Length: 325
Ligand code: PBG
Image (cartoon, rainbow, N blue to C red; front, side, top):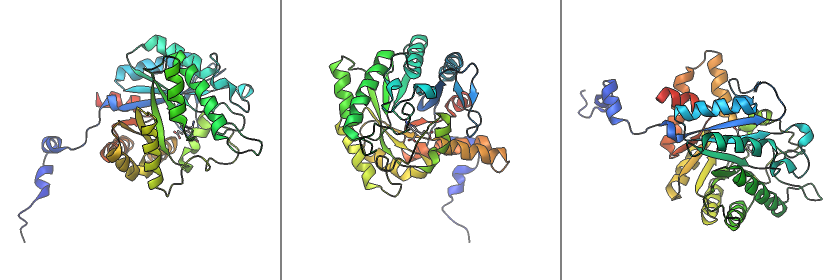
C-alpha cells in the first residue's frame, strides 16, 4: 500500500509549512480592549481575568503606548465609573468629564493618528441597573429612548477624539441613529464599528467583573439567542444598510460559523471579539498546566482569522503583536 497522493509532503519542514500557510496573523489586525476606572490610585487586577487590569489614567497611557509600539491595529476603550456615578439613564456616558470621555481625550491627544482609537458605545457600564439601555415604566429596555442616549454618548465620544464608535447594545436602529447624529454635527469621518451579531453569552461573565457591572436580570431581550444563525445575517444586513463601516461578531470562538457566514455577505471589514470568557478559559487551563498557553493563544487567533475575520479584538493584542514582531 503506497499512496500516490501525499499531503504530508507539504508539511515536511518549517520552511515548507511556512510556504504553504494559508492564514496569516499580523499585529495590525489585533485590537486591544482596555478598561479605565474612576477613582483608583493603582491599576486594579481583575481576578477572573488574570493579567488584565482596570487602569488608572496614567497606567492606561503607558499601556496604550506599549500596545501601539508593539504594532496593534487599535485600542477599544471601556469606562468603569464609580458606583456613585451610576444612575438609571447612564448619565456618565455622555458627560464630557465622565471616566471614558476623559480617557479618550487623553489618549487622542497622546496618540493622534498613530493608532485607531475606539470607544465602547453602550450604557451598561454607566447604568445602576446594568442594562445596555434605559428602562420603561414596566422595567423593560426601551429601544427608542435608548437610541437618544446612544446619540448623546456618541457625540461625546466623537468630540473626545474617538475614531471609531462601537455600539454594543444591540438596540434596533442604533447604527442609523448614531450615523445621522454624527453627520449632522460634522463628524463625517468618525466611523462605526457595529457589534452587528452579538449573542447573549455566558462567556461574558468575567467582563462583568471587569467593568463592575451591576446587571439585574439578563440581556436576552436584546442580545441574540446562541442557537440562531439567520438572525445574525439579518442583523448584519441591517447594520450594513444603516451605514456600519465595520461589522463585528461576538463572541468569537463559539461562533466561528457566524464569522464565516458574515464574511461571505459583508462588503466591509469583519471583526470578531475574543471575549473575556475565552481569555479566562485559556488562561485558567494554562495556569493548571493543562494546555500550552502561548500555542493555544495563537491557535485561537489563527482560527478566528481562518473563519474570515480580518480584525480581532483580544485581550492578548499587545502581547501577541509583540511576539509576532
Ligand atoms: C456591553 C459589552 C459587553 C462586552 C463588551 N461590550 C458585555 C455584555 O454584553 O454583557 C463583553 C466583552 C467581553 O466579555 O470581553 N457594553
